[in-house]
Length: 361
Image (cartoon, rainbow, N blue to C red):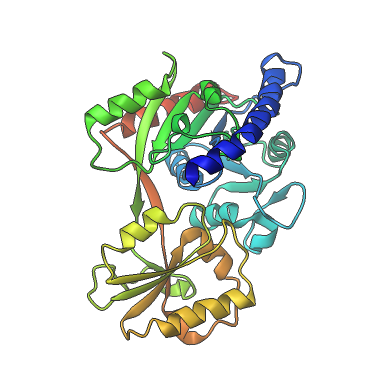
């Protein structure tokens, strides 16, 4: 059935590839113009529909740079209800800023987080309002070719490399995988920590990078559970995944690829009940009813509600959730780390680029 569906959709993928290919060619020939800026601009993005880990990699860059440089993050604010250029602040609701930008703003204080679907306009506004900015990180900007970043980081999922995928709608690629040539750095994300050196070499060869491109491999690290609602208790060990009291987990996700998280939790729980919602889903009252029903039906007296960091941003805005649910609701923070001791090499590339391209350097 899968192969038949692929054959049926493949002609539409060819048409889609033709359209995106013409668009990219117009930019490559400079018929359509990409804006350049005096401030260092680092783009973190992909050419796949969702699920490659853009936000934790953006957060990694922020942590890396914020102690030495004045950092701004610019996102389009996917699925936000507002329009135009906005800057996140303490009062920003998720509907205005978007879940991922708001997560970054709350998680990494002291940086500028802005949203604008027109990244060129967004960069201009950041530099106008915050002229002291040293570096701007574009979250999910690889396909936004109206801006030419100084350094481009392309992400591809280890479990579904862009070289093994198809163009939409037959696959998940938003443009041809050949356009990876635009990237300065390619990161293979969500890599199996047990991957062999031989397999890494096979992947490097398959990506067919040029001499100037660098390839790195990262893995996902889940942190200790953090209360979704009782934020004043965030620093206390209220619950541990290794605690034998946690027998059943009711998992709520609104992300593109929950399989890795489900597999991770199955190490700690006898049962994981998964309620899946679309990526960036805005939860409604009926969704809370569904969550409550799953919680009640779980039956076990030793149970916990778990969600993702991104979903917690949206769920936290509900004020009328039952106290029993609130006290049992946790999210798992996510960070990335580099495999094969390549962290220092990656960090040096980033520091060298920003340091050499600061406007006063």
